[in-house]
Image 1 (spheres, rainbow, N blue to C red):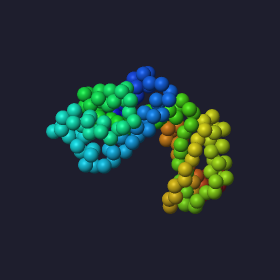
Image 2 (cartoon, one colour):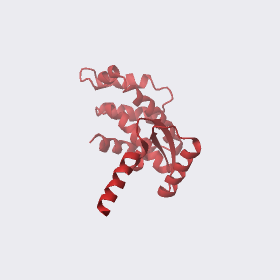
Image 3 (cartoon, rainbow, N blue to C red):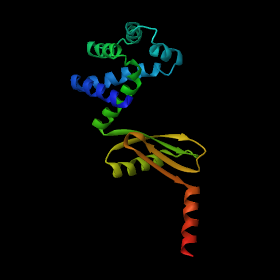
Image 4 (cartoon, rainbow, N blue to C red):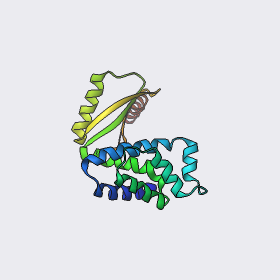
Length: 176
């Protein structure tokens, strides 16, 4: 439900700002969204005991580079008691910018560290499959194989040694 409401705000915001402002607004909203990770700040912003005017001024105090459109946008969020949607709005705005530029980011998860040529090969394979430029970052885990995830495109590819082994055994037993 939050995502649907956030997308409406993002759509309205994108209709009134220029292409240059989109990137600036995205950066500012991402920095505001990051303060929501702090539980005490998040509690204050979600508290019904604190007036919406105080909440808005608290958020605007931390925003120095904002123009009047963004300030008014944050005030409207405050008036409608939607300040808690800022992280979701920032995420939706990032997704819209990625769609427009056709550039996405993804994660490669594996036990062993892949070298840059292997990651580049994966990026090229995904580009030929999706038609989008995808920048992959690596994360190590105890996964016995490789997992590639690009959330914004809905892509998740998993190559697990255990899974291949199970499928091979299943194929052999069916063949007999």
